[in-house]
Length: 477
Ligand SMILES: [Zn+2]
Image (cartoon, rainbow, N blue to C red; front, side, top):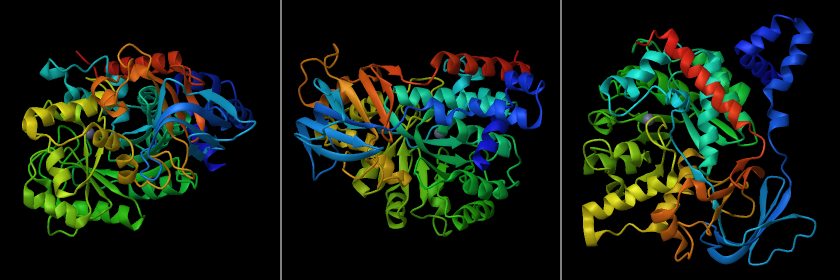
């Protein structure tokens, strides 16, 4: 019931809902608002189906690859993966000329910024990501946050991402937190919500720890669809554009509070050496994920391995920065790696391009000495992500007993036809448009490149309205 209450409050922040609410009161209002929260009605049911005759890339070493295999799913779980599965009564999904593999996993994405795409641009310093997100971010209502995360998660699903970490560094109130988590739930995607401070807050003002505890109580269920963590402000002296910079004392306070709640931490390392800053403080640990592997030293990487710290690389954005993306150095040192989109305001959500970027840059750096394989990159984009986010026992591979997060990729499209090695094809030639079907937790959310339940026209229109609204409130010149 508590969640229903949250949903209603979030929904009622919208202008149309407020208009309707003014005509209603009390019980009648609650009854009218409930359908708008949509969780029960907007997501397809978990049924029973078998993908038959697909080119299965299980990402499970015990199962391996099946050039023609079946994947049986029932009530959200993978029941069997084999060359032939006997499942009378299950709906058959033709997997012929399709690659069937685990969904992609994004491990850091600032979903709340997605709606700002009409304003942000890369080629004008006044209109790049940081100035625009900071100026408009101060004016976000919970409804704006909801709409932006709806657009971001819709885009993620369309690109075959079945798990995301929502790096929410503009939680302006408890209602904003609820709005972002409502949007994640309503999309049907699996994910972690990384709770952050509001943009513009003083660096010496701590995160709302009481609400973090409340969010954990209200939102983290046993179904494994949504987990919680925190996203920290920078600790290396850099403001990171807009995210703020905190002292080690403040990090100890905020991270300590998160850890007391059993919640993990994610941190950008865009400035000077964050690893060096944190070494010896007792703050490094296996529940810490760093973002953007640039500029580290061999000693720093050894420190990460010693403390079990992971690193998320966002290749498209990082390729625009000075210095090498240290993916190969991290792998060689033994750092746990994962892949992320970061944002989609100045580039597309495209896991194929993320993999291709790492592949290309590696070849650019090492030439014939390159040892990075296409298969390793597909592993990075699938099973490495859940291991980083703590979903490793639930998803990331097509393994009986795990939850059914999978995608079907058409190999008859012009860019993939005459398929050779599937890993090579995905990394060098794949594109999101090839993704025919997206399943999360056994729910078929997309089929034949179309959403099954999500009203994308509305999601898109709402996001555009929010962009115009925050732009006006920010008195954008
Ligand atoms: Zn980021």
